[in-house]
Length: 214
Image 1: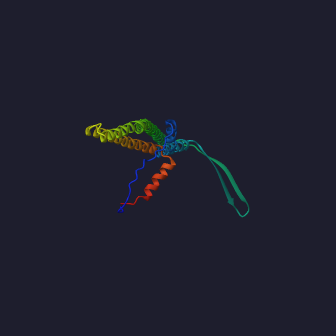
Image 2 (image 1 turned 90 degrees about the vertical axis):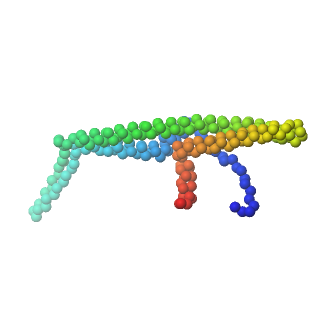
């Protein structure tokens, strides 16, 4: 630090979050965890469809040509392959099991993330209300009481203990506000992580790129 510097305090600005239904919709559309689980479901369903279609009769077209010095003979025909002995029973059963497991995992993960988001949103509402009450009422009242006690003490209308008690009350109220703001910022960060908006992901990636490896 330079020999002379000044510490400037600044309250971080937090984004106002949209309603819970909008957040849940964003979660389903943008969550990396759910997108990965959905891709796994699509892959297993594609494999199941392939195995089911492989036991159906297959129709193919064939053409042959025989060249002779005196004439040219061309043969055309249709070939129908019917799987009489191999009905792909084992492969289809395995593919069905994998598809069912992938769907169950997707549903379980979706419900888990939605519950996390709903819980975080309730904490967000509670923390927002707490910050508002502390900032606009409790700290303001404690600050006014401290100033009145200080003036009264200077003019001899109140004792030292009353003045110190007013200071202590103000510091406690201010500490509660600082903690409430920290809790609010933490829950907003958790909700942003669950939302996984493109802007938030880009911001995280920019931080990672700018962080030196240790």
